[in-house]
Length: 418
Image (tube, rainbow, N blue to C red; front, side, top):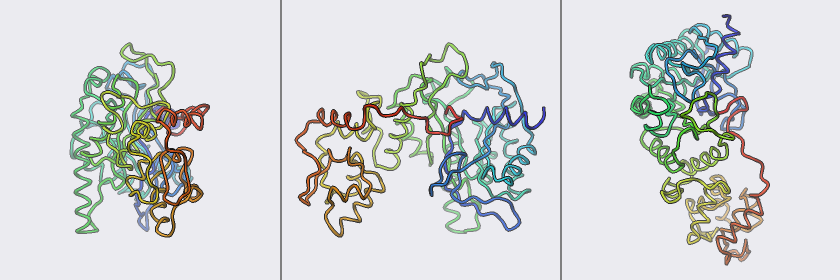
């Protein structure tokens, strides 16, 4: 099979991995090297400074040893199989980079023969790119659960970001849908990566010449809708991963049937709205000071499909509102629907000079069609009547933005289902 045929098969097979984003990495190329990473990331995603980033996203092989029910590359599926050699991936990456098609490489693989054999071949690719070709572009490398700790450590020294896909939210679901996988084989390398990242940062504070370990951090991915776990279970798992594993980000992938199996649910459509709400809730966990237990509970285990999680929380907690916009601290402002991280910082800065007015809020970037129901001002200017019940506010919000809104889109580039 020629390399173009392999590329067609293995780039298509790679589209089911969503755990990719702008990297935040700043790897500088050597004077004799090729490539440079500055705020780079994943193909057709966005960097922190707003640039669109592209990446060669492929599998090393789709010839899988495992038989996971949800995977298109499962061993019992009748699909065309292919595998790259390490040198073929190196040459493709360099050729695509020199043609200005990409800014780096996202490399994953099905499990060939064993986790160690597969991971060793993947590490061979990135080692050749860094040490032989002096490639300075972005590299995101998947870690194969069950591989040796030494291979994980080696991968982190060559890649900007590394990730281990947790795939399903519980061991029960793993046993049912991916019986050859176990949560310990997934969590152990995640914990190791977290420790190595922390250790690397400490060493580099003492000596700037110390090697960097996965400078863009680690991420993971969960498939949503293939198993029965509720949103509360998923968010508590994500919260634990952020706290314990030094994790950069969790990706949520709406399940799309790509393989027939009676263990899998029959869905009329992928749960894209659920995926979207989980991303919004995840944002609250990471940047807004919320806990999973505040967003959901055993009595309310799933996210509201009508409103974003912060608005839904605000409607359930009328005792917290209205917030006095000219006196509230930063964390309190973040709890107000329509006020984000940037606008909260702008409010704090602007009110040092004068009281905030409704017109000023709009200029700052606050989404007033939501925020006006939850704030008040000592400036004497009214935002909205505050004698309305949560039920009435809910109705007004529905009239203002909920009904007739376009359906959610998956938060990845169009060629991906997840």
